[in-house]
Every structure is written in C-alpha cells, then in structure tokens.
Image (cartoon, rainbow, N blue to C red; front, side, top):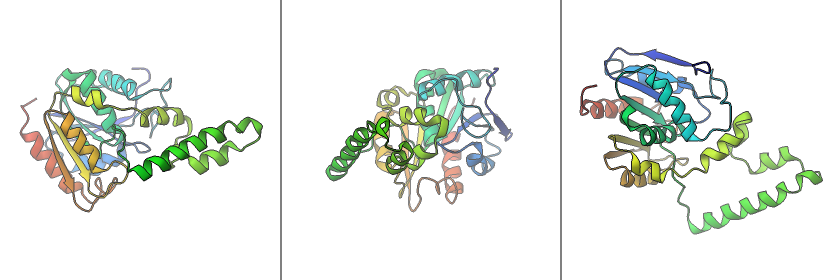
Amino acid sequence: MSDEIFSIRMGEGARPFFWGHGWGQNHQAFVPLAQSLPKIGAHTLIDFQGFGQSAPPPEDWGTAEYADYMASFIRARSNAPVFWVGHSFGCRVGIQLAARHPDLVAGMCLIAAAGLPRKRSLGNRIYHGARIKLFKFLKKLIPLGLSSDWLYTKFGSADYKSAGVLRTIFVRVVNEDLSDQARAVQCPVLLIYGENDDQTPPEIGQRLKGMIKNSELFIMDGYDHYSILGAAQHQVAHRIQKFVKELPDP
C-alpha cells in the first residue's frame, strides 16, 4: 500500500488484535494497555491517517473511509478475523468496520465509544442551538473584516482548534450518527465507559448496548475519558482478557 499508515506490533498470542486510538492521539495511547495483554494476542497498534507518524488522508474522509482503509490494511496482514480495540474516535471506525466488513471482525472492545448524538437537557439544547446560530451569523461577517481566528477560538472546541489540516474531517466525523451502523454489528462487543466521562458519557454506552445485539456494558467508577486508559489500565485489561477467552478460537 503506497499510502501505508504507521504501525507497531507487539505480543505473541495467536489472536490478531488491531488497536484504533482516539482523536488527537496516536498509537502510543494504547501501548500500556497492549503491554498488559502480551499473551492473548498479536497486537498491531496504528496511527490513523493525519495522526502521529501517518500522513493525512488524500481527501476529507469520514469514518466510513477510515474503516474501508483499515479493512484493506487488515486483509493484507491477517488471514483470520481480528479483535478490534478502539478508544473514542477509534470506536467510530470500529463500528463502521464491523458493519461494513463483518467477515473481518471477530469481536470488539469499544472504550469510551463515540458515534451517537449527545443527549442534552432542554436548557443545554437551547444554549447549544443559540451558539450555533450565533456562530453561523458571525461567520458571514468574516468577508467584512471579522477575524476568523477570533471566531474559531471563541466558538471552537479544543479538538476543533487543534485539528489543523484535519478540521474539515473533524467536523464531518463529529456530526455523524452511527446508529444504523451500530444496529448492523453482528460480532460480540465489549463496551467500557468511565463514570465521569463528560466527552462520551456512559449514556451513549447504554444506548449502544440497546443497538448492538451481542454486547456487554461496563461502567467504571471514578474514571473519565482519558484516565480509563491510564489509571484504569489493569481493570480494562482484565475485562478484555475475560471477554476474549469466551470467543471462539481464531
């Protein structure tokens, strides 16, 4: 593959594992967790296009394009269905991968999975809607001299501000609703969320569990969107190991 992404391999088990990181991260985010599971799989940790040591994609991709690329990447490296581990954005890609290429995925662990619209209170919906309308109005004033840097700094999220050349992709990705894709997933899925996650709150996991037929949900007390990969590393590893042992041999 001429546009091949960066990846590393570790582990010695028979089952092929592929790991997809969250937005703004790279394969390093998963190294400690993969190192906790050396004997249950041969682990391939990747940098998605535009992150870490991988070049940006040739066009403004959505998660479907990321998943189709990963399908080709996996087929070139594995003769058996794989176990996908994702965090946040990597879960979006995993859901698409399992829905679009079901023969490739034997199971998944989705940690702090995104992919469904956030549920907001009435007050939050009104506030959020008003901010969007104000942003769209002010954006029309940029040709008249309003500073675009000021506008995006004022209204953009931290991920949006840091997205750089991936900004259009970021906007496309966060506005995707993967409900239909989640319902199409047939493989066993382990859903893990941190109780204190305010970026992908556990209620998303509860809805995903209702959509994915063969799924289990665990909510871990005291952890947030990122500490679930750090301080909760050994608890997450234990859940993955137990879940994988119940899957058919590769």
